Picture 1 (cartoon, one colour):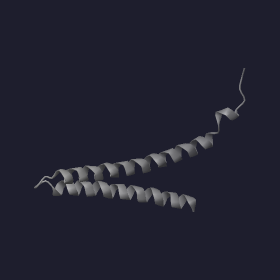
Picture 2: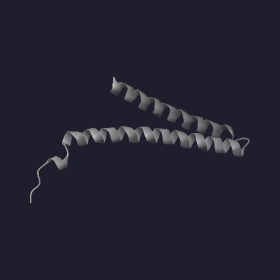
Picture 3: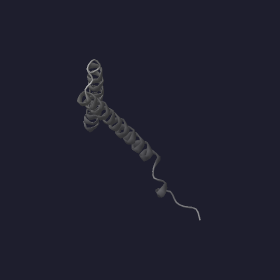
Picture 4: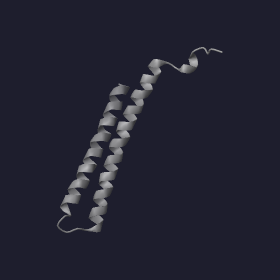
Length: 83
């Protein structure tokens, strides 16, 4: 159950991030005919916020996979040392 919620949260974060990127791009395309500073700034903020959300979700998932992989190898501190 916990893993399912984890994937739902990651999927939702990626979906919201992609939606924000698309919203920023559509806003940018809409102001082509009459450029406005507020519209440009808003679209850049949407694109950056979306990119940060997607980046955070991907990094969190990769970190979880690396941590799980490292647990399967075991800790090198558990092995006896040679003098």
